[in-house]
Image (cartoon, rainbow, N blue to C red):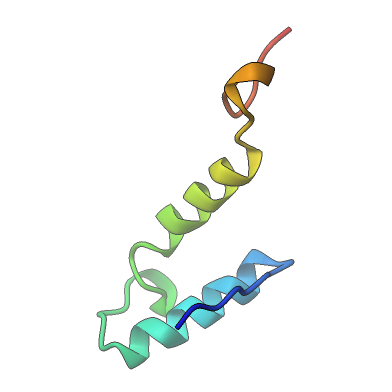
Amino acid sequence: MHALIIYDDLSEQAVAYRQMSLLLCRPPGREAFPGDVFYLHSHLLERAAKRSDQTGAGISKNR
């Protein structure tokens, strides 16, 4: 089974991720969120900003 979920707010994604983690019996961390939710958000933001090698790969580039 595959699903595509699009969030316009990372707080909504964090709440959904917390609910899924609690259902899977993963231990809660800071503020009752799973410990890896903060890594997950930074990873999502980095991937969203990634550019191709042809246009200068990386998150940001000083010109």
